[in-house]
Image (cartoon, rainbow, N blue to C red; front, side):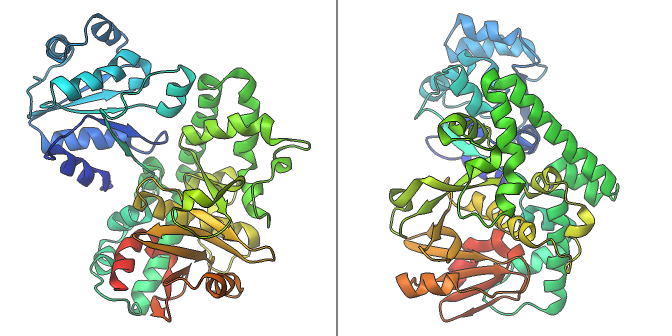
Amino acid sequence: MRIERDIIEAFKQWKDAPGRKPILLKGARQIGKTWAMETFGKECFDYCVKFDFDRQVELKSVFQTTKSPDRLVKELTLYCEQPIVAGKTLIIFDEIQECEEALNSLKYFCEDAPEYHIIAAGSLLGVAVKKRKMTVPVGKVKVMKMFPVTFKEFLRVSDPKTFEYIDALDEIRHLPGIILNKLRTEYRRYQVSGGMPEAIVALLDDKGVGEVESTLQDILDLYELDFAKYADPREIPRIHAIWHSLPAQLSKENRKFVWKVIKSGARSKDYEDALMWLEDAGIIYRVYNISKPGMPLSAYQQTNAFKVYACDCGLLRRLAHLPATVVVDPIANYTEFKGAMAENSVLQSIMPLLDDCIPCYWTSAETAEVEYIIQLGEEIVPIEVKAEGSISGNSLSEYNRRYNPKYRIRFSMLNLQFNGGLLSSPSPLAGWLNKLFTLLG
């Protein structure tokens, strides 16, 4: 089972771009970074060579003796079976956080040998850089972020015909009932597996829910080991506590992250470093509240009011011990957490579309709350998320009354339509948000 990843298309555009710089690929553990790099190398180059600084510790000595790209290439050829030919070979530096000299070498490849194609990646790269006070060659690398598999990528392999129909939409109109029902079914299956490739393969290869659960639990266990391996010892229990508080944080009707949910008496100053560790690891997103929807959104963030979501809805579901059978049942009543799953799934779909900008959220002094506020082009757009077909509530109406935005978006399980500035869309189409927005004219 092969899952086509959209980032490979981004790699292809980079390959022939003028002024190309080495790529520094960031992303959470187990999302398929190494697979994507190797697949791109095999499909788009004559040769592909990978150097793993975790497994091949002897490589470090190569970078400790010289900064010259020509000399580095000559010595690296001794560690691989394929030739390194400029323009014909993709060079992969994997687990680059294990060798700061290799990370710094990207600067010299950029300046002195741009003819070489290099992609570097590492597990918990952001964490390692901060912990070891490593120098990143800012301005000399192209930083790319990779995310868990999106529902759009999932649908492309789980139901190709439905994917092709949605991908070919050229106007905002009601979807045929059969298409809408298939979208709902596949979306719920996606919420079971989440975006971890190994879990998706287990699901789509019909290995059974037990195998999916086991795979997700293995990844959660790996994350726990990462806490112990890469975090400061005093922060480990705090990171663990924050991570395990996520289901409770999202299930409650809190309008921001509440420290005491972690532990009675917990204070922000004691847990802020642990929260930042999880952010740097790429396994949570922090969504800030804004005082008003102005441009740029970052100027109106309230840093003391935010919500925290998981990078992957499948991991969140497993972390919460929510059975897969409940998720796939459209009439299952798991109330608040169903809303949390809906919000997390939509966020997971739109994150790769936002050019490194995490959405914000808005609340009024009364009871209104709009889940996400994003910037699309020159428009500030509010996004409301509903778990199923119930669209009761006045939050989006209150926002509209106050700020009169040109466009509003509501994701739910209802059909696609546009009326009076409100785009109502099935949640599974969140990954097509940019296209839908373009179709609005």
